[in-house]
Image 1 (tube, one colour):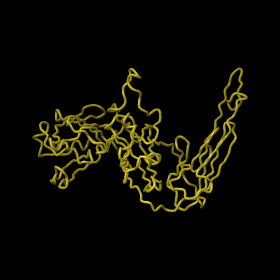
Image 2: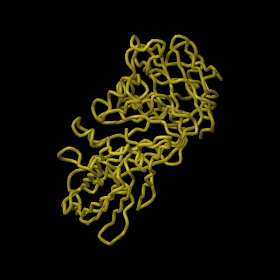
Image 3: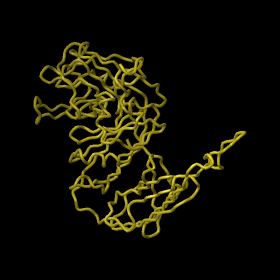
Image 4: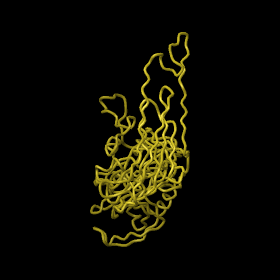
Amino acid sequence: MESRRRSNLLYVAVAITPLVLVGCTSHNSPDGRPTGAPVAPLELVVTPADQARDVPISAELGTAVKGGRVTDVRITDDKGTPVKAEPREDASAWVPTTPLQPRRTYTAEVTATGDSGKTVTQKTTFTTMPKSTKPVVTTTLYFTDDRTYGTAMPVTVRFDPPIAKDARADVQRRLFVKTNPPQPGTWSWLADGGEAYYRAPDFWRPGTTISVRTGLQGLPIGKGHVGDVDRTATAKIGRQVALEIDNATKQMSVLRDGKLIRKIPVSLGRPNTPTSSGKMVIMEKHDYTRFDTRNEPNGGYVVDVADAQRLTWGGEFIHAAPWSEGDQGHTNVSHGCTNVSSAAADWLMSVTQVGDLVTVKGTGVDLAPGNGWTAWNVSWDEFVEGSALPVPAELRPAPPAEERPNTAGGGGTPAPVPSTSAGD
């Protein structure tokens, strides 16, 4: 996970407030340290190194400090124009808010203040590399500005070609997510490196604002590729809606804030084209669309459908199926989709949002990882194992149940959260 404190300042000053202890017999110095206590020497190392050349345009200003903290940062280009940058949460670096330009020279001045009040300033000047001629990794961010999503919406990034294991940590460090109010999560990679998902241990809280930046432009990825472009988006989380589909009863339960509001008869995939069982997320919503399966196994048909909501990349949808209304609630006759009546499909379109959780059970065929946004189809313990970077302690999996009596296990379906805002 890479969340950050945002700043629009080009020059950032951090105030140092000394701690003063007051008592009848104080033996402390004015800055709060015991009298005579040793003061750690102040050390500051800034990167890139002074006069460095061929620096990637994705470069960050590294600020390693011992015996103090950074209190002042200024970055300018070779025309004297200030460069906006934001500090990483761990204070290890300052990240330019947009990529640097090729073949340009930048100067950074960093000041650190020690525990004794002493300051030190380091200056570095470096030049970026020419525009890369290496092939790019094409990225797709499935998160759009000014949208309202359901509470199970994972931030999803697709990579083409997929990212090799030894390059995933570098890429993940440049995937930034900020939530307001804060709700920390982490990234998790599919095994083949073709997609990465970001989510929290539980559903997003309704009303949460999520801001995303994939800061990959010019980033060296492995030995043969660079990142394509930076992508950004800010969106909101709407009301909590969940759909639960049970093959045994051929019924869909529609829940809002954890409360049942309607049951709908369904017809699922017939035996040779079964519906997947698992936890999916609504990916797209279409008033009208066309299914053309002439080039697919078990396909060969073309049909226009209304009120279709995509659940998988493999073509499983919830949609209106007036031709199967007599089978709905009784018999599975579809090619893998969830068939509902025209009236029910129209009503569902008014209730659901992209990002709502859909759980299907009892079909005997498990949802394949990556067939749709499958971030919720694993427990939290399994999800964090897919991170290429260490996960903060507060997000690590809990110990086994026998080591923590009277507590509930991680993972599973998050508890419902009352909604505070409407959806699309």
